[in-house]
Image (cartoon, rainbow, N blue to C red; front, side):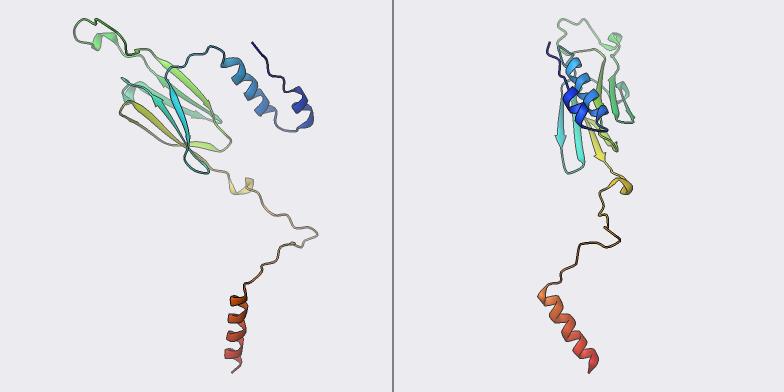
Length: 166
């Protein structure tokens, strides 16, 4: 098993400890882990994502979705074998419980969850608070940005000023 060593990056960065811990834990857990149920990750926009899990045979009451800070846990409860009528000759559809964990980005939240046609779709949105969004900082109380008006706007203002003067 190869181990990732982020020590050189940890020395030259500040505040990324959580990211490096996450990468190292994913590398540890990815070796021979359980791949049930299979899933897709889809980016649908700048801050919109969808997780699709193949959960054939599960009903909405069998699935539990828990969203915590930076963590989404999807659990499926094993169905009761006594619900099957008759004798089972071949069992090819998995009838087992599962738990999938997804690490979410900061400010990520679950917007919607739907189960249809054996697929569980979980829509996620990343909403960055206004206070956390990038903003321009003035140097010595002055901004270096000027609003440049087009020639049409300048001509319109001149014409409007001449009309007001008359």
